[in-house]
Length: 372
Image 1 (tube, rainbow, N blue to C red):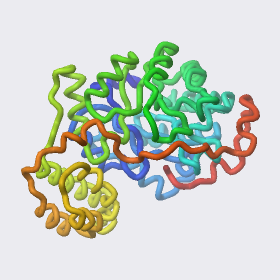
Image 2: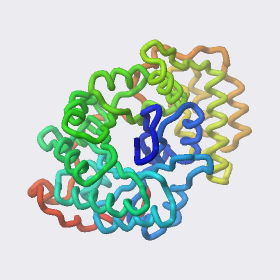
Image 3: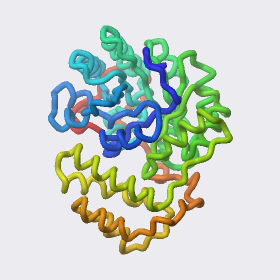
């Protein structure tokens, strides 16, 4: 449950910058149930009503449960953003981002760097929960294990968030230093589940519906958060719904290349409609091509042409050149998708690790006007 909303199946689409816009969320919702979170929104940009940010929080009329993720470093600004969400009826659920490992976020003390400053973290979460109460909006958090293996924060942060009154806690079982490399530490998810009374959601290395079932069995979590696994595979949510409904005997969705081509065409069409501009929508779609075609025997020239489309007609003409009978590549199952990078030192504000109890807001932390 998130407030009065029953999450069934217990699946959440992780917010991904440049990906989980209204078009992609609709495509995923058509496949299966769950909670579909929009792109990460910067609290300062929301409060200042930056036009770009206001466009990013657009929800479709048929999105019955509107989920919004906020990123902020200042407790007062975060609370103001939450109040704005409530007053303007912008969303039904707010998630706070404490998991982003991107340097432009962590060097300001935000994202996965912030829980290290435990007093600042507690203030942000506490003020957000209190600001949301009058509107009946449940607040959750998503975080990582910590900055690195020497600076783990997830259990302490989870307990602090629980004390503040959050509805649930999600853990991406990697450190910020790992970024998206290596394997997720599902044992850490189990540890957090045992430590908390509020629902715990697990995130990391869910590439198939069977992975979600294994995570639940291994950790005891109440649900799963899916990020990179659905890139180029919105039908994964059909798999997840079937897995949670039918159990281990479910049959995974394995679309032919022709069926994938239809989804590609629809995705591009939805983007054009959402952005109200064919050229812009097609340009935004290009990054998805490699994910959709991963593992399929499609020639390099055709792949490159698809990744350079400028119109829907051009896209459909190129898709017509694909062999619709080609089966889904079995060797692509269970494989990482999207960002796969090496571990790297985490960018932090000067002196960030010196004190865990310093709750001052880092200088320049709220200057980024981009939402995500």
